[in-house]
Image (tube, rainbow, N blue to C red; front, top):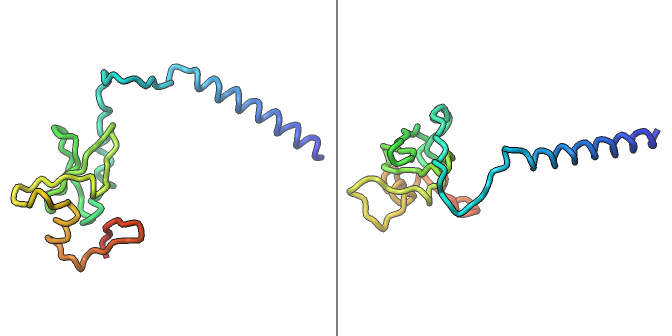
Length: 129
């Protein structure tokens, strides 16, 4: 009984290894180089149905010129890098002109919505209560 199981495991392991080696040599292998000759992949607009601002939980608007997701209510812009939205509040930028330059997006949200609406969790991330 064990002999048959062990034999099948060895056979399947060999097949998987060969499949991985072939896939690594295939044409889909992405080349990494210092040159930025490739355009950034486009943002999939269908994601807007699911993405919300992590601070206010409100829907976001896509701005193709700057490749950012905008929260108009709070005046925050989340960057899109390589087609992937960076939804980290500390990485967002403020877009309102009347906000102090030294203010972070998280501080601006606390000011607008009230500091009691937010708390910091164990890893230092600002969360809505």
